[in-house]
Amino acid sequence: MEDLFEEIEKLTLELINIPSINNSIGERNICNRISEYINNMEYFKEHKEYTFQVSLNQDAYKRVNVFALLRGEGGSSNKTVILHGHVDTVGIENFGGLAEYAFDSKSLNEKLKELDLPKEIKNDLHSGDWTFGRGAADMKSGVAVHLVILKELSKNIKNFSGNILFMANPVEENQHTGIIESLDTLNYLKEKYGLEYNLAINNDYICPLYPGDNTRYVYAGAVGKLLPCFYIVGKETHVGQYFEGLNSNLIGAELIKNIDLNTELCDEYRGEYTLPPSVLKYKDLKERYDVQTPFTTFIYFNYFVHNSSVNKVINNLKNIAEKSFGEIISKVNTEYEKFCKLTKEKYSPLPWKSNVITYKELYGKVKSRHGCKVDEEISNLTKTLTKKGIDRREICLNIVEKLWKLSSNREPSIVIFFAPPYCPHNTLKIKDKNERNVIKKIEECIDKISKESSEEFKMLQFFPSLSDSSYLKIDDDLNSLKNLMDNFPNWEEMYNIPVDKIKKLNIPSVNYGCYGKDAHKWTERVYKPYSFNILPKLILTTVYKFLYETR
Image (cartoon, rainbow, N blue to C red; front, side, top):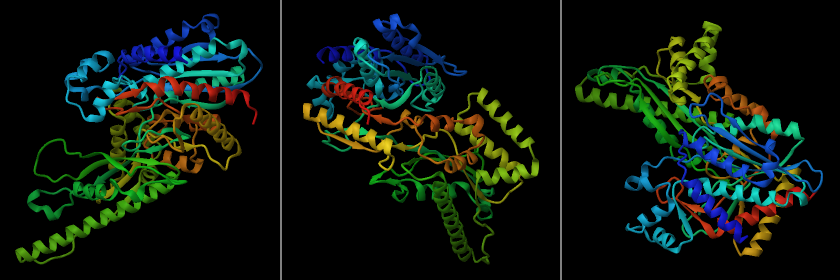
């Protein structure tokens, strides 16, 4: 495997050297280089029809998905293992003065040696065992490993049965557009060549879960993600008559206090827990300064899911919103009563009442009053704002605001809805016979490589960072998915994930990944001895296990 190590290292450095920040032409450039690498393999020189690019729909950067199908000639078999990974990275703003070296690993290493670094980073840097740079861990090294393995397998095609499908996807770091649009191609290839997708191996980075952790984790699924949003309507007033109004920011602050980092909302499945929700956006919707109190506020949260249905999530959030609303009404009345005592005025309870509704409920009320023209207005608004390049979450907010105005409701309220992205949760489940067999085979591969290498492996159910693997298999049932769509403004045009196609494909997915540290940080790095030597052996062992064993 020494030759593989050297080639993987060389290719990793080359891919790092191509800036491919999300939402840039660099994503197209790196895909072109990947296609060039594949086309230079002898197998694909003879079988040009098996490797191609598919352009993303109406994409401003002309980004593409890259595919390469390796068809074994040692026997007849429809079994297929998918090797996939994403090619985009996050930005380099956090590199500061080192930004010009972010994609030049060798120069970056030298510059880092001039800095006073924390002990762990310094030790890694001087060991020579780590490659630094943006994308080193997340996940250009993982793509390089897959490509070199594809090349290795292509050399032994006569002694090989079954199929290997390589896939490189852009746009993972925000909307997952690449993998989502690849579903049509996966279905096309399945039907054209009669492929049977037995396993998909993602190579997104793995990392220590606590200080000093050297375990190599294998993930049998992907954490799910929802983006629950809250449109809060208060009652405007002049600051000189503060108690005559209800500040929407005050309600929002209470809502954040009750949701953000609330471990009671950590979702558990078979002993594994998600992280608690975290607030990602909090703003009132005033556009300028004046002495009117804010009366509309927008908030959204990152909400991880392992197994809970959308129905349960909505119920939990609605209960918390009602509690938060009630607590603020109580607080305002308490403070107003105190103020009346100070000023010797007569106290009367303020008129506010808690009112929390879902987008589905709001839409239903407006639709019953205004009919089908509501859908036309929503569609036109979506198209107009999309052409202007408005953020998708803001478009969803604009739709909710539009419906709220059409509802003629002027009472303080909270509207709960969802916005992009939605990442389905999935994992291999013991109770399913086929998935139980997949788990057993992976465990056997892990055990074999562990004995040969003395590496310590552990299989977990959910990759804790967001992953393209979410879009190859969905554990949510149809009722849960319908509840999501019903509470997602203009789902059809905003984020129409083809859940039916994913359900139909239902590809068992696992994440192996290169071992790295500090992904998305300026000290991002990948550990070469494991990633370029042990990991390729694990992947090859897994490929042979799934293509040759019948059980």
